[in-house]
Each structure stands twice: as structure tokens, then as C-alpha cells.
Image (cartoon, rainbow, N blue to C red; front, side, top):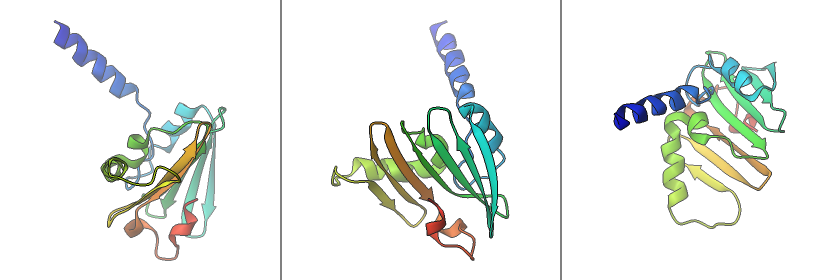
Length: 148
């Protein structure tokens, strides 16, 4: 009986997790992000991509960079708390986890550069920031500097 309760609770918790526009995936979940943050969503068309920016009441800002094909090629964040990176990064979170467990200087941002993804994350209490992008998904007319 305890196992059934635990399974139901786990399913409820996972079902209640926010749906992010996940790096490397279609951008169809941006509206879910908007609802989760209870913030203001602004969609800004740019040259060769669209920027979806969600500003939450607590000061958190999440930016999702979507190609014209509808794929999230980059995400960035800043705010008083670190967002759930496994939700933002999707399958790329394993690259981040492996890098964060390997020895590196504890001062300054953590920078992960693999063949698949680039992730930069840093900050301190009440001032976290970072960005992640998939180089192979960045539209040809853009560079990685667009993800800020």
C-alpha cells in the first residue's frame, strides 16, 4: 500500500512541475512558462528568430530564443533564485551535471562547453544568471552572442 501512495505522490509532483520551453525542443510550452511564473510574457520578433521573455513578480526573467522553425536554440535567466535547470536544459542537463561534479575553480561562473551545448551559469544569493545554447541549432544568420 505504501508503494502505491508513493507512486501516486510522485506522479502528482511530476505532473505539477512547470513545463518550460526546453532547450532543443519545440517552443510550444512558452504559455505554460507564462502561467507558472504568473509574470508578463512579451514576444519580440527579431531578425531571424523570436524572443519570448517572461518577467515574474519576484524579479526572475527567463528568455527563450526560438528559431523561425520553432525550435528553442537558447535560453537565459537572471533573478533572485536559480531556476530549475533540468526543466530549462532538458537532455542537456547531464552535460551540466557532469561538469559541475568535476574539479573546477569555485570562484566565477561555471562554463560548460561540449560538442552538444554551451552552458554558463553563475551568481550568488539573490543574483543568479546564466545562459545556454545549442550551437548546431543557432540560425545561420546569427551568432551565440544573441543569447543573453
